[in-house]
Image 1 (cartoon, rainbow, N blue to C red):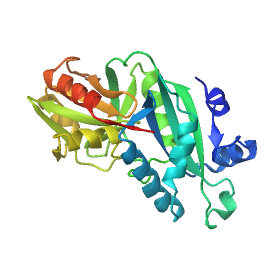
Image 2 (image 1 turned 90 degrees about the horizontal axis):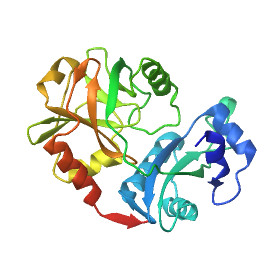
Image 3 (image 1 turned 180 degrees about the vertical axis):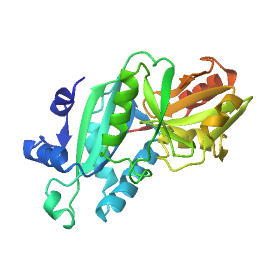
Length: 265
């Protein structure tokens, strides 16, 4: 679904979308968001998504966000039966480049698109040196990540995996990465956005973190990516290093994630 179609199925603060507000979002590009998969009106990790919205709103705008109202507005575009992907974007239509320091009154843009009927296949990724600005915030400022994603996709890969200049692995373009040795799971200890899927799996008994470098990747048996929409997805190629698409620990993690409780939106 293209961006125009997604906007056409959206609402701003629970009402029609003002094109002028979208102009501000496009030209100023200051805000944050979260993306949720709604299945039969329910969301996995909903409290984490709402907490992220409130936290990032305080960080970027210095003000509180009424997450229950945001939840209500999201519910308006959620299906009863079926699967749908909702994105909640928080920005202030009145801010612009010249008065970005003004007191903010953030609005919530909710957009909806269909979810793919089948789970995605394995990921083939290439590393790139990149650190997102304020990586702990899920910012709308995606230029750097998308620039690298475009480059690696044009080179024949599916997505990009970020490292620092010393080769320490941090995160994917829009996902977290985990490493497997036997039945043990390791998350990289590096600046990144802690995704809701990653947080749920850590709380489910997979808490270990440690630095991981590109030079150490061959020491791991399997690699996987996590994302709120796609769940757990095997990574089968990092640069020229191959990993299996099937591994018992990754199957266990995928099953654990699918079986986690959901909350009515």
